[in-house]
Length: 111
Length: 115
Image 1 (cartoon, rainbow over the protein chains, first blue to last red):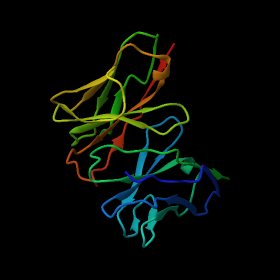
Image 2 (image 1 turned 90 degrees about the vertical axis):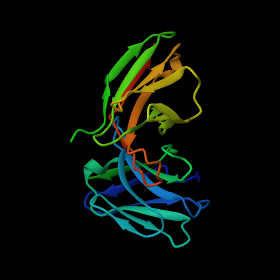
Image 3 (image 1 turned 60 degrees about the vertical axis):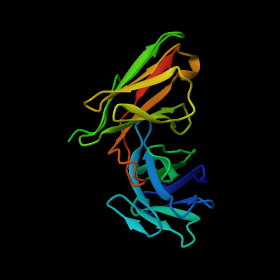
Image 4 (image 1 turned 30 degrees about the vertical axis):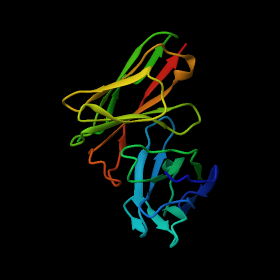
């Protein structure tokens, strides 16, 4: 699976958009980008995934660059409950269930 | 619709003991994966069970073993516990298709402390 690079921490004001970047410059054509988040001492929560097109669901939007070497997770109106560690994961078709987590980004949403 | 459940929530053991952790998958899911998360680290893949067999395994010693039952629930067993086995153990379930878009959903985890 391709390696990902994320900033260790980010801050965001409540009500503003949180934009979390992820670099995956070695991604292959058949690999998907997945995002999970983990609120303190809880299990990781699935957020969204995509291949090359932008994706949106009720939680967030995922923007993948045209060359697919980076992506951005957007939480449009961050709340205090969005404070968590956010993990960007690149997943290949050969990995079956294996998710390879990095260190993630600690997002802190301030009042 | 119940999500992934794990038991117990917390567990304290001493070095050399054995421990069994349990996981019930989300309704409709037939595949269970186990992860270990040390303090301050991301989860690390231990293994995955599908059709009652270990389908894939991460870089963990044989002290870590598992089992899947016909109702798709699963157990993680760790023998000869070491202090370094202290961690949050996470279970994730999925549909088992093996597809790259087969999303995993995680349980709340079991916190194991080895003294």
